[in-house]
Amino acid sequence: MTTMPTIAVLGTFDTKADEHAYVAECIRAAGCNVLLIDTGTGSEPRLKPDVTRFEIAKAGRVDLEPILARQDRGEAVAAMVSAVPHCIEELRQAGRIHGIISLGGGGGTAIASAAMRVLPIGFPKLIVSTLASGNTAHYVGTKDIVMIPSVVDINGLNRVLRLILTRAAGAIVGMVRAQLPVATDRPIIVASMFGNTTACVNAAIPFFTAAGFETIVFAATGSGGRAMESLIESGMVAGVFDITTTELADELVGGVLSAGPDRLNATARAGVPAVVAPGCLDMVNFGERATVPSRFSGRLFYQHNPQVTLMRTTPEECAVLGEQLANSVNRYTAPATVLIPTRAISVVSAKGGPFHDPLADVALLKSIQKHLKPAIPCITVDLEINDPEFAKLAAETLLRNIAEN
Image 1 (cartoon, rainbow, N blue to C red):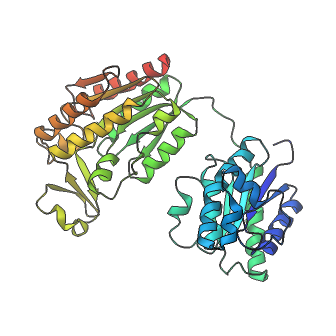
Image 2: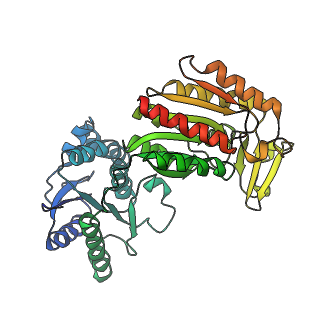
Image 3: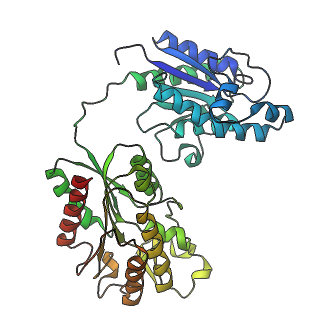
């Protein structure tokens, strides 16, 4: 970065003004500019902001005055959580900020993390939080937010907090100033993979590499699917090799690896070419056998390992899953193809395998065919999903779709 970068220092300047001022001072001393952003919802800020809470509210189309007048802290924090992502993304797109740091307790962390989750992967983002030593999944989401435990409460400067804040300021400056490796110029293909589809994805990657693409693989474990959707929406992706759509089954039936109801939908919003297969829709994932809910008593299970128990989807569930998959693909605007390997959609559903169930497979196939728009190719192949010939066909189909886009 040839010009002096600007780092956003975002926080509640009514309650944590001194702490944010200290971080800003450290950042300036390290040679970076600072943009002070107030997200306070209480009294007047004790640190003069460059971006006020009312400017944040305006960016998010939130009428903040009556909310503050009611003096309901929960309502005010929720309003700021809603508005702040719009303001921060506008600042990033305008080139006014090159990194962001915040300090907070419960409310401050909720606001700051909402602001940071809207920022793309790779944009430097850091929170010093009293909540950073526990489960941070709901703050981080699928983004690369760095969270540093404050160790002590963020309630007045002392020798411990100064140490933490000084290091945090140095960290965000280092992240902003870090030189990225030279770009490869290779466009990206993302692929979804599970242990039961690993052979398919690994056989397809050489075709993408030979065609000049870089392949980034995501494990279809819930968080992996959400991360893949996030990267697709970022605009960095040229093609989607969505061979392993198993997370739909966990969302529908109640397994532990759901990626949420939005899985498969980023490809439509981003307008990216795709190949989609019903890989591993024959299974729902649970933990140890003893953790499987009692309502599933009598179902067909397979112990993948001591920590993972798989449950076979029924024909009725497969019919719903086929409709869901088709409805998602129907919204795709770029060239897309659905490929169905009729001999097996996973290792364990092949003939002779523990999940071999022709009735369920036929229900899935017919549901996809019934609900998929006629304009979208749906190709059935008399192969197993991990057959090298299926991988070759799937890879070549995606490359053709990308070329036609």
